[in-house]
Amino acid sequence: RLHTSRDLFSLAASRLDRLHRPDLAASLLDQLLASAPVSPGLLARALSLFPGPDDAVRAFSSSAPAARSDVSLSALLSALLRAGRIDDLKSTFKSAESSLGVAPGRASHNVLLHALVKSSELPAARKLLNEMAKKKFKHRPPADIISYNTLLAGFSEQDDAEEFEKLLKEINENKLEPNVVTYNCRMRWFARKGETFKGEELLDVMESKGVLPNYVTYNALVQGYCKEGNAGAAMRVFKRMKVMKRREGRSDLGVSVHSQTYVLLFKSLVEKERLDDALWLCNSCFAMKAAPSFEAVKGLVEGLVKGGRSAEAKGVVAKMSFLVKGDAKVAWEKIAGELSLEEGAPSSDP
Image 1 (cartoon, rainbow, N blue to C red):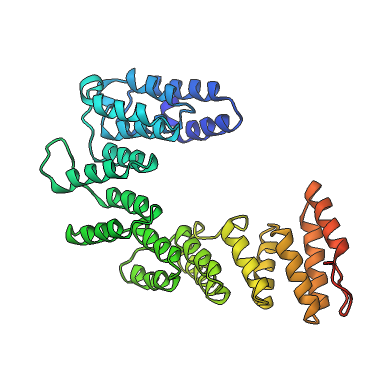
Image 2: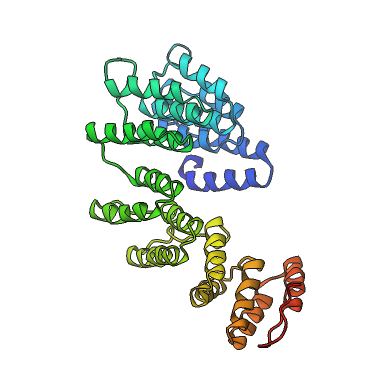
């Protein structure tokens, strides 16, 4: 029966969308919704998978009243948000109770907050949060930590220190428990101010409260230290992430070797001539069969040769040549051909 294979439907719909067949993905999801009585959770899941917002609107409008809830409404609003249709999101939210039979709850309010922040309507977002927090309006659900995190991120991007600090104070006064997103917002704030060390101190606070950091946590700290020119501290945080990943047995903590974080860290280590750390990081990528940035590897190789470590430099070049394929291999071989791998040889730079 179709409704017993929801995970398979989700996978198939996502794959079809990536293959640029939104028509087939929508048809598949329509079959899923028509195959059995639809719960609010199933409707919400389907709405999140529809490739276009119009399909999501159609599916919600044709769904049974029993499937409509704040959960499924928030999924519909999220579909409009992903498509950048902020005005449609606002109008759908406003008319939800009268036209769709669903009174927006906290999940839907949080999507609206996200939309207002995304469209740089921070005064309106702040007004909505205040109405939720005061609990004096029957049509406004109480704010939660997700509500506050959304505004924290918005005011952080606007570099509004006064509002940022006010929100942190309100979180404490309302006895809301900060989660990993809250801490990540604070870490990015400190990194932006050139005070990444304060953000790193929050790692210990998180651990004491049982809040596990994620890759965003470490990205913020590593990037912050790199931009401050503190390659040693950046490497310390990176290794701390590796220890956490092993200790918790989690695969989602790794920093992608193709991310800006990795590029900045590798470049920073090479520039500061921390060749042992740079070589360790490079070999870690080779072990994962991931090719680092060509320019960063070139800098590492030249640094190793300059330091009398030609054998290690040749090893790096050989591993890169073995790892890269196709056009990338041609590009790398051109760079490798210009490198001087013997000690005392002139540099490839003019």
